[in-house]
Image (cartoon, rainbow, N blue to C red; front, side):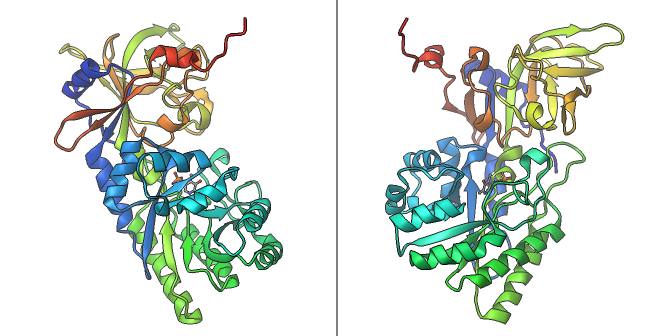
Length: 419
Ligand SMILES: *Cc1c(COP(=O)(O)O)cnc(C)c1O
């Protein structure tokens, strides 16, 4: 499965007249479908499916997912506050963070659960909240991210408590009489069922070391294909294999462990497209390239520049003229050589021309697969471009604005004039 263009010219024109371009366009139908898939994740003894909200945190998406039964993973104290402000019940929020916030006690008192992610976090948590329930995030020593920069397990990753530090953990847990109810790991395991089985068995070993643990959270990292040729994880295949591991563990230890999954990408990646317009074009001669310049770019999507990520893209002609095809390099509107939407796969430094419908200035241009880590990870306000608008394409076809374009004055609103 790869991302499809759900934006027709008619929809593009409606969005253009409502909020202009560039604009993130979320498909409600697609969001509901992916949520239903995750909620159907196979399990032996119960499932809590969480949405890793850092992938795309607009409050409307959080509420849509909450209404379908999803819980949430927050990556910072600020994300917890944001989710609560969106109306999410704190009891549905779990925090796994690289930076335990100063106010974590009040967040726990509000009802969230915490997975401590380092020995020092464990110590701070135990001293402040002795006797409390806590989850432990481990780095099980295995990693399999898509690129070095997205690898979140193994010795080169700082995420989680290194699995060999079990003794120090046990000491702190005993000293503070903590109730370890959950083991957590998120290593970006991808689409290979064999890797997932290894992850499950390594984590069940950790569960065995903590007799009070009732929940095992395996994080996110389920791969989703954005363009042709990229793999999409089959949740049913992986889940059925994982289920067997849980059943065997129960048969051996008598402990029926509740499963938690926590995808970000899988839930949203192909549910959003960026609608932009071609505002200029240029060429660098016979031995060079033809460039299309968008009114969007790294200000809306940094993934191509950061990871050499591949997104599907389509020209939507603004007129009825006959069009052929052309090879183009698509670039963003920033004065920054790295603002390229068509890098070579996995190599942000190299150009990789893309065969597209012949384009003219003024045409609409759609970048698909832009639901995960695009709006949330944009190079906001670089070159002082205001943050883009967001719309939700409702199931009935209505277009609802869910974020206005940022008013220009907000770009410098927090500056303090001393000169
Ligand atoms: C980012 C993150 C996720 C989601 O990862 P995806 O690759 O987007 O599925 C899940 N859990 C934790 C703790 C994370 O940090």
